[in-house]
Structures are given as structure tokens and as C-alpha cells.
Amino acid sequence: MPRIARTFIKTGLVYFLCALLIALGYEFDTFRFPGMMPLFWHLLMVGWITQIIFGVSMWMFPGRTREEGFVAQKWAWSTYILLNIGLVLRVIAEPMISHSQLMIWDILIIVSALTQVAAAVTYTIELWPRIQSKEQRRKNRKKKRNKG
Amino acid sequence: MLAPSRWMIRCALLYLLIGFTIGAIMLISKAYPTYSQVWMLLPVHIEMLIFGFIIQFTMGTAYWILPRFLEGPPRGNIGYSKWMVGTLNAGILINALSYLNIFPQWGTTVGRSLEIIAVILFIHLHWRRAVSYQR
Image (tube, rainbow over the protein chains, first blue to last red):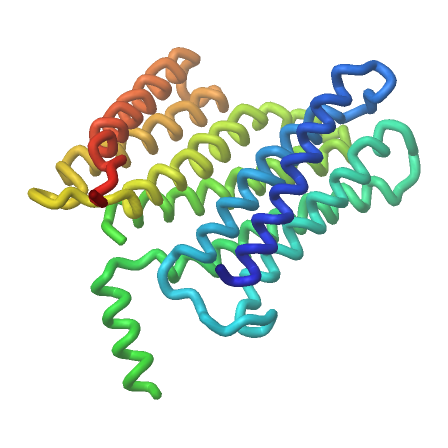
């Protein structure tokens, strides 16, 4: 399993636990804070489910590069970085936005929204060309060999 | 990867892009509540990401990756698989258009029914593929 897939899956597991801890905290009045339910759902669906889909598909779909590293796998790593920056910023800023009038929380929310959309774009750039029939894959391999 | 899987996964990626964009607009509206009418899009956001992305992506991948039949068409009736893709996506689109009040409210009944047909076809196509050929 490539490092990018392992990183996605392990990060997803951490979010899974965090989501359930938030759900547990919701049961007690003392641990409740504003925006808790949207955070729970997004940690579960984006942090866990989406992240595991991203990680496993980058590993299992045909046509992945065997070379490790940011440069060789730039779209995959960009997806990981953007998605997680977006999610962490949301976790920080969303509860604060109803408490504080400071502009910084609005800015962080905007950055969070934009980085998550950017992650969806980089993931599509990574995966779209790898959705191929066997024949397309054979042709592409031939092309690569001829170039080499 | 066979055509039905390719169609489903590509559609799932398109729904991911649209769903995340809608989500981003709604998140930004938390900082700028003057545009709070964007919250009308919440059911569309949920429909596109749960049914359009997560469910469709996993269905498309399962169709490709589960063990194939040793005799006959390797993944069962190809016609059924095309109907599965068609009914699922028609259901998602009809639901989204109904949430946006472009279609009447009862559109969601039609949409959900089409999604149920897709799931029945999915179960029919995959039930006997959940198998081990090892002795």
C-alpha cells in the first residue's frame, strides 16, 4: 500500500474517533458547544468516509505511479493537504463564529470552504484519467513504451 | 474497468465537485449570514454527496472489483447494469430538482423509487458475486 493511501486511512481513523467523541459529548450538557452537530457529521462523512474512499481509490485504481513522494504524486498529496487543512480549520472556526465577532474566524471559514473545494478538484484531476477500460490502459501503456 | 463502473465513478466525481461547491457556499454563508437563502441547497448538498458521491462510488467500485462469474457474462446481465446506472442517476437528479422546487414536491417520491429500483438491480447483480472460489 503506498504511503499516501496509508496516510489517508490513518488520518481517517483519527477523525472517526473524534467524530464519535463529539457525538458522545453531545449527550452531556457540559460538553456541548455551538455547531457541534454539523461538526460531527462532517468529521464522520468527510473526515472518515470520504478520506477512506480517497485513500483506497488512489491505491486500488489502475495507473498509479509506483514512485513515492510529493512531486511524483502531486495531485494525491495536494488532495490530502487541502482536505485536511479545510477540515481542521472548520473544526477550529465553526464553534468560534457564533461566540466571537473577530474577523479572523470569518476568514478561516472562507479558507476552510475553499480548500475543501480545491481538494475535490485535485482528487478529480488525480482519479479521472485513471478511470479506464482495459483497452484504454493497453493503448496508454503502448504509447508510454513508444515514447520511452 | 467496465463501462458501467466507469460511468458510475465519473458521475460520482461530478457529484463530489458540485456537492463540495454547494457545501462551501453554505459554509461561507455562516460567516456572512446575509446570503442565508443558500441554506435552501442543504438537501441538494446531502443528496449529491451521500447518494451521488459516496453510494454511487462504492456501487461502481463493487461492480468492478467483486469476483466475476466463471460461466456466462462475467458480471451478469449487462442490460441490468445499464439500467442500474440510469435509474440511480435519474433518481438523484429528480430529487435534487424537486428540492429546488423546479419539479413538484412529489418528485422526491419518484426519485426515491428510482433509487430503490437501482438498489434492487445492484443486489440482483451482486448477490451471487459475493462468493469465494477457493476450496
